[in-house]
Amino acid sequence: MIRSRRHGLGGRRALVAGVTAAGLCAAAAAASTPAASTPAPARAAAGAQADAEQLAFPGAEGFGRYATGGRGGSVYHVTNLNDSGPGSFRDAVSQPNRTVVFEVGGVIEIDERIMVAPNITIAGQTAPGEGITIYGNGLSFTDANNTIARHFRVRQGINGDSGTDAITVVTGDNMIFDHLSVTWGRDEVFSVSNGDPADGASRITIQNSIIGQGLDTHSAGGLIETSGGVSLLRNLYLDNDIRNPKVKGVNQYVNNVIYNWRREAYILGGSQWTSEANVHHNYFIAGPSTETGPFTRGNENFHLFAEQNYHDADRDGVLDGYDVPREEYTTVTWMDEPFPYPPIADVMSPAEAYEHVVENAGASLDRDRVDNLLVREVTSLGTKGAIISDENAAPINGPGPVRGGLAPRDSDRDGMPDWWEREHGLDPQVPGNNADGDGDGYTDLEEYLNWLAA
Image 1 (cartoon, rainbow, N blue to C red):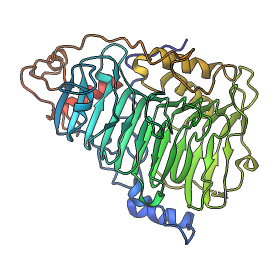
Image 2 (image 1 turned 30 degrees about the vertical axis):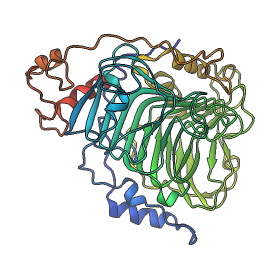
Image 3 (image 1 turned 45 degrees about the horizontal axis):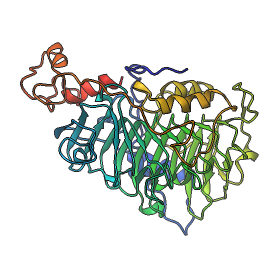
Image 4 (image 1 turned 90 degrees about the vertical axis):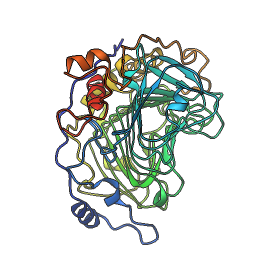
């Protein structure tokens, strides 16, 4: 069994230099001219901020890498597993300019959908025990600008509202989702879409996450439909019938693993909208439910740079896929050079991406029972996995248990435990969450949160 590690992989290398706004616009314009009937993708807004801006955290990449979260704001402690009221997660994310830390681990069962405010950092890595699972009607990050969300689970389930997603972003700007485990959506599992790519969200990253088990009869990984730019990096899509994901607009899709789709893995638009995508170094692995190849529904409006996307189709328990040839991508407009989207520090081979995702995707500091089960499906390499309609049936048997634990003492309630403050020369009796003792742009609280997640 793949075992999680509380302190993860260690620090990642710094992001390589990006491109300027002017350079991005010029290069992208030269690379492709969108159809006259559709708005040009907003590439400058989607990823061309100055390199001097602060990364959301070390290892943040993609279009949403500069999200600021709750930096400079207040600290809210989640002290119980209640659906609402003081100390609840719902109350924590209801107001902007907060960093949310957890004194409890376990399952938070919610009835109504939770709407997340802007300028929020959700620091799931602070939850003791096996961390936090939010189970019920899902989360909306619509207009939750400058969100940083890390290391927790959102599991919707059969009792969630029909036609809703486990996580939804309709509109908003500058968000990064890292090491989330998202499952059991009633409509989609994790979508960034409002139906019109020209008016959708911008500068979004979803990285190192699990997006799986959309519930039948509409088992769908997600719609990624915006010209504002979405990066999907090192994620695990699994046990979704369709939309792993479906893409319209500007998309960066690198080092993902896609397992046991049924009818549609990566959907190449299927639309009159102009799309511009870099799709490379991913691994598509057929499972017991898989009926089709990795790419479907392309047309000439989909402008694609693609290389080293591997497909393991034989379900023999051995990772031995082949490099997908151009004719298997269906109809697209081929690009010879990648679009100048945000650089990735360490692009892995498809086989390396498989190893990385299996070990690290999702809320993997302490994987819960459900994620361990899902990862075992993937490592069977074709022999295990299923499209499900009810998470309470075997072998899933619901979201729990999720073990809690005891949070360390934080006398001044600044989000940093007393022992950490003493070890770093800080005063555990004086709140110092917004100080920046070493002048590196991260507050002292962020230094602690980044260390926890490293």
